Length: 280
Image (cartoon, helix red, strand yellow):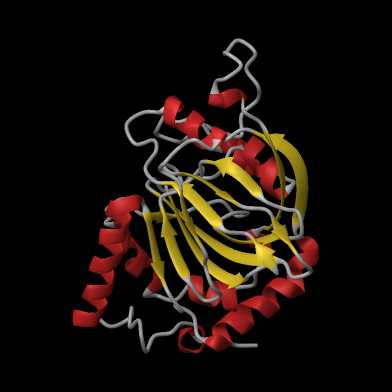
């Protein structure tokens, strides 16, 4: 089926394709929210038809998702016995999730139609105020769908890429709230505050409930975050668009295997390209 952006995106309320006062006002509001806590929400960014189209596409490829069950720390690194036992790098939690990788989505599908809409990337770039702004070059991860089912959750973690853009597609029967500690690492790793979040004693954690069709811009490399456990027969679908500050960036082979069950030659060829020194 052929889609147009007008079918899928609520361009009537959010004319991201037309420069003007409404366009600029939306961008300024998002910039303000991002500066305040690293997160901005655009309610009902998708049309009802768009939500339905994405839901149907997710259903059609859900069998190809990579289900994984493991124990991870917030950095997706191995245990380091040389560190003290209360170091957050040694705090491991059960992780159970399912990612439908980017190679499952056709150029003519609903998800790629939104991603490839000529005005979409410039709009996101303007909101983020990024001069160095590139699509994630990872062929498994530039645009994916996270599918979480009963009992699944994604424990506290930092993202590999600098910014993450998501579209809520379908909520679970219950649970699945998005919780985050904004800007917890900006100038350094800030291990003491990370430790408080993991222990449940931090006063910096915020909770939001996304609804189908909502657009979220989130600085996930700098803000510790998690998805709470879910219950019920309905899976939670969230589309994830990723952008970075350096062209050609891809995930590490280890991270790719963890999330998608495989690594491609490009992941090994470009390992170590990242410019910052934060732990992954």
